[in-house]
Length: 274
Image 1 (cartoon, rainbow, N blue to C red):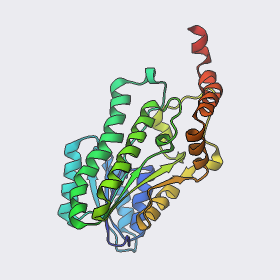
Image 2 (image 1 turned 90 degrees about the vertical axis):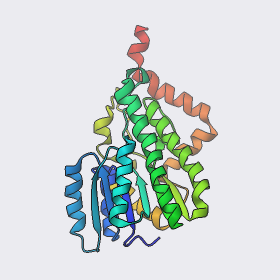
Image 3 (image 1 turned 180 degrees about the vertical axis):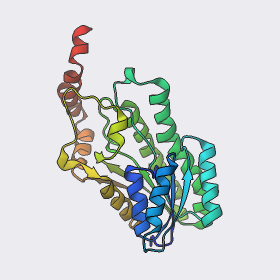
């Protein structure tokens, strides 16, 4: 797909991967719809993109992607201004990483499910008839390594990303005859606001190695490549593919290693008390 002058919706565009992706589409000369809750940040980003000498154009839409009425309004506003939708990047989402019994049933569990799963499904559902009528389109669903390898404290987040994986796989096989491509991207650790809001607490100081950390711009560039040359899934950096392979081939070994080196050391004090 030649991205120039195409209409691209980027959800969660107010920061991190979404912001970088919107900026990357702007550099390619696309018409970019910026959707998120923090409208002030979207407006600042829109000004930056509009100043690019690429013929780009933006539309700022304040939307909570966990609410169907906001999603429907976003699609309606996009069609009113641009008349079509060529690209959808389902990026909006968040994580609360803690032991399951510590997660708030509403703010942590329900909210993650509403945005990370239902938000993706409902947004895609609203865009799909437009792309089917056009007989063309590209849908990029932002997943995570947690959608392939689930680890302790990621219970709900991993569940939501596994759901996105299954949804995308089925959807790809449904819509390909209409000329619509569905791609999944699985980033490892990315330097964004995610960590600040996730509530991560580590006694072992277990972290993604710095050499494996990605920037939001690297993920954004991967999104652009997927639009231009679609593929079913992309794991970045590629070394995480080894972890995925091990998890599938030797799940017992991964269980043992994870529990021995992470779960027990992290919960040692609680285990002693009980």
